[in-house]
Image (cartoon, rainbow, N blue to C red; front, side):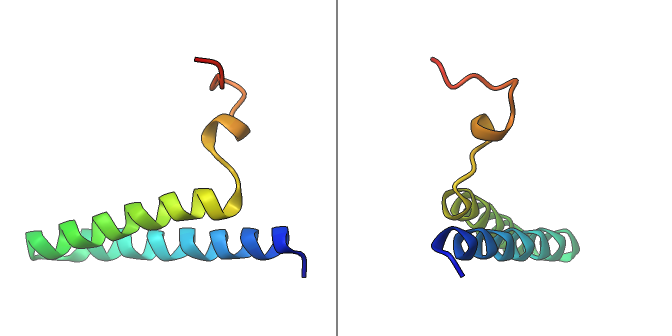
Length: 67
């Protein structure tokens, strides 16, 4: 498999794991545990963006890359 394919697969797996963590956070009764799970999900989402090579401005034509 190509490096790009592996990165895409890894990113997809990270996004799936982040979704699982968000769902676990919703079910958590302890506020500290809920926040920890949300934070971990957020970090995984960011990592998946870098691993997958896609950023919102790269895929959304309404987001300008010019500042």
